[in-house]
Length: 312
Image (cartoon, rainbow, N blue to C red; front, top):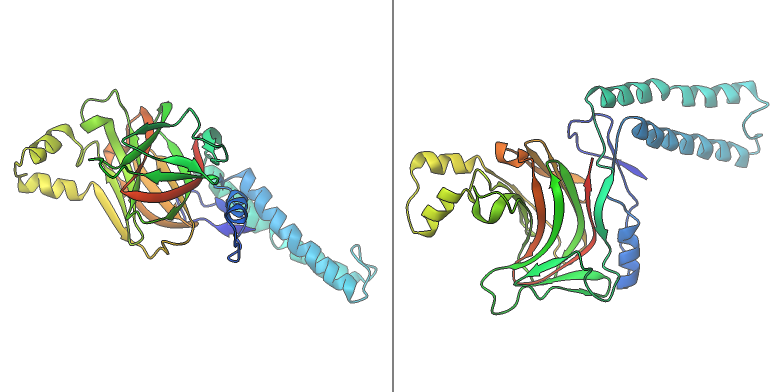
């Protein structure tokens, strides 16, 4: 079925997904149902197709209802019934035309190129995954994010990218004892921030945080001063507040949730379970050569599934 996407600049965009059954009792069933709900945006003519398909379903359903009542199916021998069905279909045409034209007018483009995806169905992590201070494993069809007990840094699982400005990351997640995790974007060749940090999203059951690290907390001079115990001046402290956006959440830590992160120009947008949960507009986000994506798991464990990276 098709559900509405929060207005992220494309009036005609739709979020298309299949609802997951709440009664799934086994891990295999849950995985199959998660995989059946794709993370995908559509716009323009694609939206029109999606919307018209919904209208057609309504028409077919109505047609079948009439047939069950003993009236001939469309085309009807009854002129009045035939006209009512035609009028119902035609009433949607102006709406479809208007929404599709608006979507095209704002230049909406779907992130349709899949750069990397993984459902973790193998016995081990694929070779594309890098790990640092991590005991993360592929187990029972999911990525289990684990930080070693003795580690001085959260577990990092990383994917290298061809340098890109705009992209989106989709992943399902379930907390298993860990208080939080982050999805980070870096440029390892950039020397103006700690470890090339550009921007990231941190998720806990109660809080969503979005960061511009390049011009904020990871900016090299700021981080080095704080690490050395120095005090930031009031102007810098005020500036840093503009580099973070936080939203309160109420996530069931025992349930699976769907996270979608999109970077578009200088805007970082996040949706959880199909609803917009937060956004941040800041110049560092527009960095043109993001070349590394990290999933960082605090302590142990978070389970991840249906991971994908897409670009335009």
